[in-house]
Image (cartoon, rainbow, N blue to C red; front, side):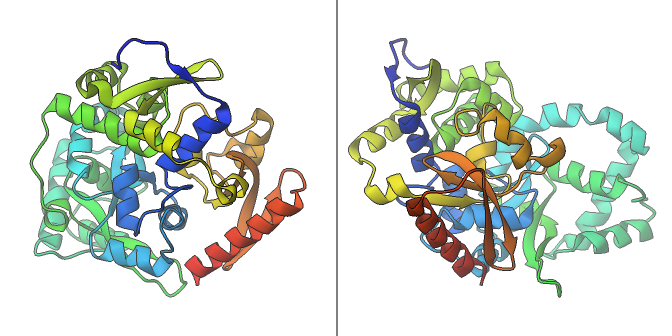
Length: 369
């Protein structure tokens, strides 16, 4: 744990600015999507299009074409490293992340597997078939894989096929790799063998992996609480505390609104040495649905009023709308009409914010062209 001392008190605005600096939403951006993934460790990717924009908006100007090129080259990949949720991650980090999360997640799948009638023999046969189909750096689309499994006697009826893919990715055999360009303009990804697509780096010891998880989360998401980290990883408090003990003075604490947050010492120094510019203070950001700035934390109250949650997740259906962020807080939603942005603010925006929003909309149009 960080050394026991009275944490420095900061305003909510300053705490949220530190988060935006950590996430490359404000301050220096990253050169490309792969660098964003390394900085953030993981960005939610269950909505493929939203995830691509989440990556691009944190760069110096990457377009959708640039992001897809990074995926095609294997410079970033998509899989289920934690929480049973798809994320974009750096290829060199996926295995040690799975070494921390896999056992707990797989242990929780037994009941669902029974419901689907899946047995150990089914998983073994599915793994054998898909390995044969993909060996030699080949890739396969989801629908095509279902056909291959069916032809080999592996039933994919109902949700069995999806669960087989999920399990084989969760256990480190598969990941989502190169992009499939479809005629409808909505790209998807093909499956590949993880060991061929992303050669394995040296493994981390368990305690070292916990420490790396905590550090990388805080580097890309801090300031955050232990509860935020445990929720984000679906890990344990004990694992988080083990990691913090190893990190020592690399992590410190601050207090905001009576809550104690963990933060890297490097981020504290960076925020203090780079005062916010006028452009940063006035910035309006168009973030995608499921963006880490909102979903990277268990407690979202610092940036979102309770009364607006229904507007972000209509009907509580789990589908998060794209959000407009100004002054660090969520002030509305937006939707896409092609490459055009249709803003839906909670209240009328000031003239200055409307101007900034137009600039953000032009940036999105350049990305999506």
